[in-house]
Length: 398
Image 1 (cartoon, one colour):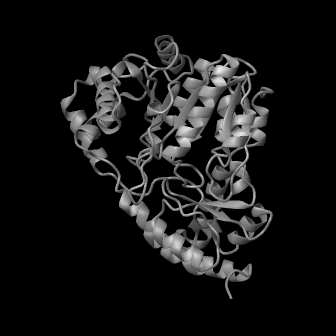
Image 2: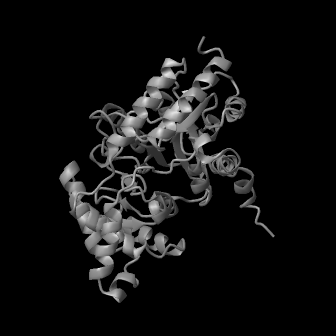
Image 3: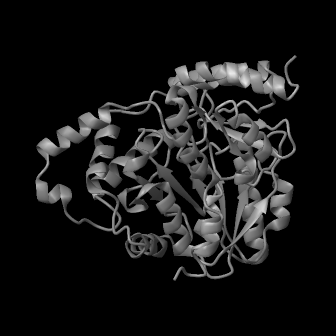
């Protein structure tokens, strides 16, 4: 009954989701307060203005207009509001025509990949990376090419990157700030990446699209700037989600930006709008589109300081206990070096202390584990004795 194409997806079902489900079972046995689940990137900082926006819109908008069909690309006024916000922040010159509202960033990536990939085309990704990219590329019969991780800095290995670009390379996906490392790719790195891609486009006489997946763009700490890629490379497309910046992952709302500078941009924009429809999304959810406009107009965003406070507590404690970790400058993840070569074995050992982590092999980077610190500050405080015991168990702390 199940198609051959679906069987690999079933065999490689998300370890993150599996760990999350296990956490729920453990909480039922030991009590939620005694299970320290750092597995899933589920935002923990409420943004109450979102509820206020929903109530205001429901009171003031015409029912049929609010809940009816619209262009597959989304409401023009919402797209124009986002375009003007981006222009103000990043010095760009977008209009509503350059934006397509999507059912979150995941759907947006599927939309752009469906719009550009032919069977056998290659898409380059940088480990560690969100391995659902593999599924998205496979959906359109593309091939993923992985650049191995630099475990010193978790910045892209640009020499290896240049060597692996071929005539079949159609796209490069970056995730900045990065999931799972929390590292923010610097402006210098983006410039070097862009220069390599421009060089290879000329060498092969091809066009290579840089897809920047940016659901964590607003979550950057200590004044760190996240470079906006369209300023550095002509054939850039940006995918964004409000899941993290407004703490609404279940609402599934985001957008694609396809600048006029992209080769054949008018046709690509049309193709992406059609892809939005034929993938079954039809259009992004109407009410939440209007909520996004309200939140931009009223300067609403998540309290980033709360995540930074969580980061500081967890990072300082874990490094004090002897764990090794690159200090994250963005997102809400920490990528910890496993004291065991087999990080899955380490994750199993941590479960005995009711600590749930995700193995780095789930991000094409074995030997590491990911912690999601988008949890309550109190959970982190309660978990520290367990982490201290784990550190002692593995000889990191005397």
